[in-house]
Image 1 (cartoon, rainbow, N blue to C red):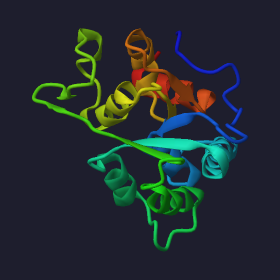
Image 2 (image 1 turned 45 degrees about the vertical axis):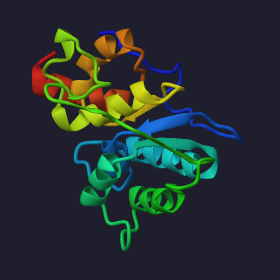
Image 3 (image 1 turned 30 degrees about the vertical axis):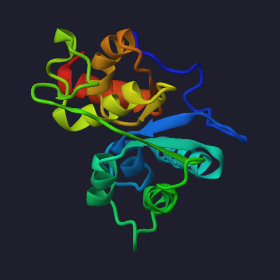
Length: 186
């Protein structure tokens, strides 16, 4: 199975001017230890990515705050001690800082959820709740990579997304393939 990823999934962004990323909620949950079935290596990898983003990276979210609200709904920014909670606290402080966070406007679409979500039969079954991440990546002028940790359905969607300029960085390849086989038998 082919999917888009950088050559080293454990590499983390570093240095000033690091690239912009869209962070799927499951990266935050894995870094918090809130996802069953992942290895400690996967938890560490997600935490390292979030650390690196806080030090020198950039994050893209939607200006309607659908992504941020999802983060807030699934974590404890004010009292949580996990690395995902720490990342959310950082992001909430940086939302208005254009040097660290880009907010993009998303136009709604009756069928696809967002105008920027590809009109592609191969993506018709794409999870409605995850379409905001794709829409942000497609709307942002730099087409940032989406960081993905443990949602194995993205493995099947990655080739079609790539056809529309959306790149996925899978942080936990071993777990993803294991989850995929368990869920779908492939």
